[in-house]
Length: 211
Length: 211
DNA sequence: CGAATAGTGTCTTTTAGACAATATGTT
DNA sequence: AACATATTGTCTAAAAGACACTATTCG
Image (cartoon, rainbow over all chains, first blue to last red; front, side, top):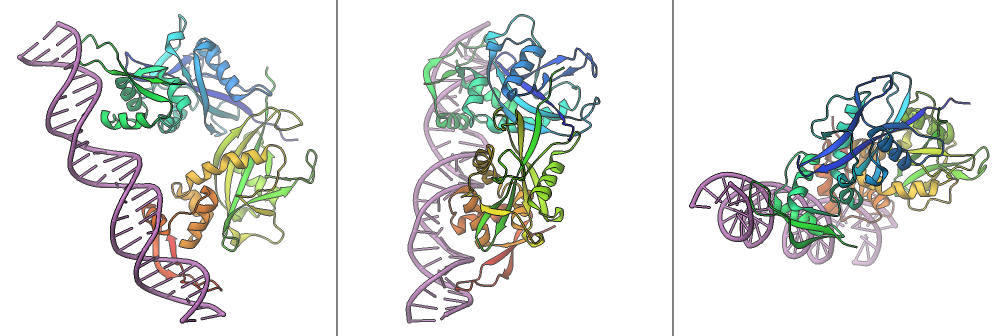
């Protein structure tokens, strides 16, 4: 009988912050060795018979202190199988994304770092973030579950531009992103406008998910 | 301490057959319970510290009887985590693709079924094939490792058309596929022509990977 | 008004899609 | 010649990319 590999589920908990105008990823200092005190993605060992999304939820609530109701969606990314990625021994890491609704966050939360400038992390988590960002960029505007989870039920054109820039690395032209959004099923441009920024400027229009 | 889930690696071993003019997937009858005698994708339990590609190779050589030298490339597809997918208990299945070079096959091989009409398989393997086909279709002409592995060092326009039709479900116009292939890095159209079919017709031109 | 931000109209380029017409083999 | 297959040229439509110009709000 072959001895089985341990499986951990590591999560990119993502949240769009309208103030920072960026997509943030939740990280937390590790409580135990190895890498105690160092920042890491939230991760748990997959329990026997546990679904990946349930493990992801457990990681986000347990390791980041994010309430379960704040998790709006989740999905698979990729699997990392380098045998030396964990000094305790070979462990498979299945990476998932989870989107977090910032309006439902509790008091003391995790560290939220812009996905573009994540601090050095424990294990191979830097590599996981680096490898997964293009996958996330590809999902935006094409996977409605992910997009709606990240941006919420209502958002402005300006926020859409910021989120896209965070994930893809460059800022689309507003007219072009508008055309892309018009084609997203279930998304529609409303007649409303959001409040203008304190510095002034034309107030952005609001998009909303229907159904 | 949490009891860990077992991890199996199940492989879509793919091969392009110029005679059948289709992409074939290798399946073999199971030797043991459960589902003894029924056809299934080749799969093995992932050993501790084993890399996914190594497990995939082990599955293809061990379960399909394909020699290791015949495996030209491999890669990840997706993970299936339904707890009831294996009657023996919860098992995670990580699906990988592997391409097989038909010129290096040994004598008694597995059952090769067109990917478009796979017979009923054991476990949730029907679902794995069904869910992974669009992922494979998306990789063709965009992942050169996969494409070159599937079609070999040299192939004709007609074969390219057939392989694309097998994976995507509809046949591209030759002129349009030609333009796509012109843009694939490392692929170039040669001045050569293959032999014509017994039934006649203009002989197709040959494409080759450079470098 | 001027600075700051958002939105619109339009032009260009690229890519995808569709066919008709032509070329080159076998029987 | 009749048939079968492959290739090319070209036309159209859709998508992506890039800007200049206009609109709205705050100080």
